[in-house]
Image 1 (cartoon, rainbow, N blue to C red):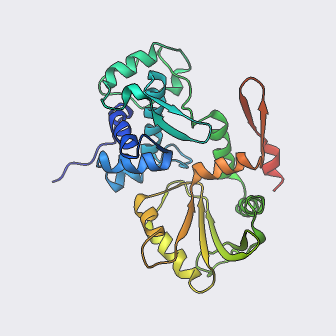
Image 2: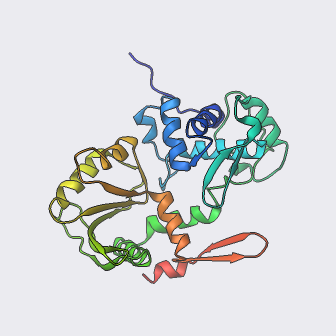
Image 3: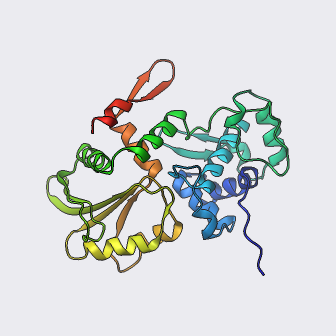
Length: 293
């Protein structure tokens, strides 16, 4: 009987992360890096589908990869830009790191709430008095926003997506969600340089886990012959098989927005979010704004 696959701990993902960035030419987006790590570390699909926490807008693997990047950044091996691009520092272009040393060095730099500690290590047992700053792309305000998105009324969530798409430049955005329509929740128009217009159908789902390839195929079947493009939005994640299905050769492409990107867009368009710039960026979630949808 085959052994059940074990979720890799974040320290075990450090060197695969470095290798992934090297193979990408020394830099990459989080999505590019994570996708490459999945292959390098041979992480099975069943583990990639495991959500992190109750809300599940991020997979457990991606959560641990975020901790890996944070440790590597604090150790001095990686750097990231305000545009979300991660790159290897020159001194680490050609060699691996010792995860034990990285953990020991970073944990010696700062002390914070132990509840913020990452998944336990098989190499170095975490000291309960040790802690780290929250993961760079997992700020506390994002956790608050995830809880709100998972609890607001479904119709309010659809109106939120409608507003976001309008802010993004969509025109004639309508929420049309109704049973028996193949999961299509709305439609809109996208104009490119005032010359080209594309009809877009969208589906928005508040998933607590991962969207699989079958949901993508069902959506594509529902939009066949009715639109030029499809947009699938979820508060959860997409499995690697779902992402592959969305761009399968010979089939109409479907653009995907997962929970992480959705939160990023809500921040970008300041929808229910207020950003204050003092010495550092401070982001606050306006709970009342969501209640008024």
